[in-house]
Image (cartoon, rainbow, N blue to C red; front, side):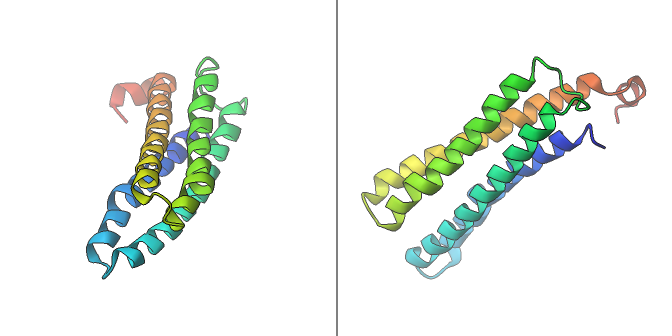
Length: 149
């Protein structure tokens, strides 16, 4: 189980970003009565997502440094960069972009920047998940590889 924990964290990080950004927020704008109401709710969801992203990435950073983690040592630096990139993008959106959107300062421009940075977070989480997934397949015990489990 401990060997699979980094992969589970990466999957949770990727799916939380996907669910909030590609499903929940668009539905808010579709079904809430006004864009202002949807935007306010989306801001709260993105703030919560920032906390989740930071927690998942920090958890991953701790786990991949543990000696009992079966991730190849040559993979750890790359995973670290992707995880840190995702956290950095999340914090930049939360602390730099979101306040400008809330202040309605050049709304279209900052919304595009925020969207691009959120997509960047998603790419970082996807990269971490893909690398961990490949690594887990390489270190799986022979009986699991043969049976396809």
